[in-house]
Length: 205
Image (cartoon, rainbow, N blue to C red; front, top):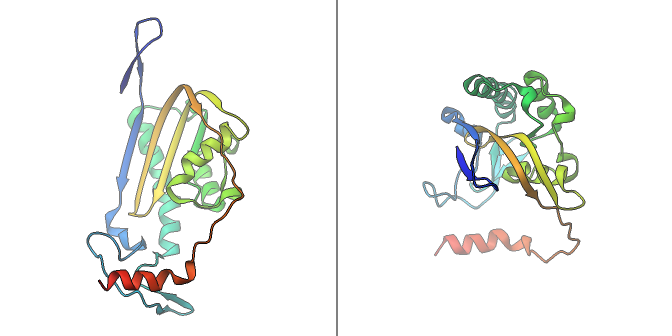
């Protein structure tokens, strides 16, 4: 709970509520195996790991069936736990901003939680799945696609994915400034073809 000073000198209580969860036993379902602190150095050479799929140890791996099952079962379950724990009625929420995994998963979650589709903004059709950035990106796209916006709403945010982890937050926004998305058409030479040669040289030191 955050206590803010009101403009009239009185104290005003602005509560933000969160529930976080990790299903650690399924960590292998969505993972970048090497490159982190625990497993720093792996094989940079790509080889056939599954029929038609070549990966090295630094490429992301996803068991699509497991991740899909997690998304459409555990996420709705967390919603119900969250609403029950904090005695929240979904009708009190003005908008629901979910991680933009894919449209099929979003619609499944909305159906199971009974979220009206007109209260669940979607941005994946224009920006794709940008990982952890999808929630704030969707907020900016919804509120301030053309200009800066001042928002006074109760919103619910929900992220889920690698870990396998998931979380929900209820934010009561008051006079919150939401900045617009700036589209830039410039690009730069990323020299991506030499990426693995450079990483091989770096890892061998």
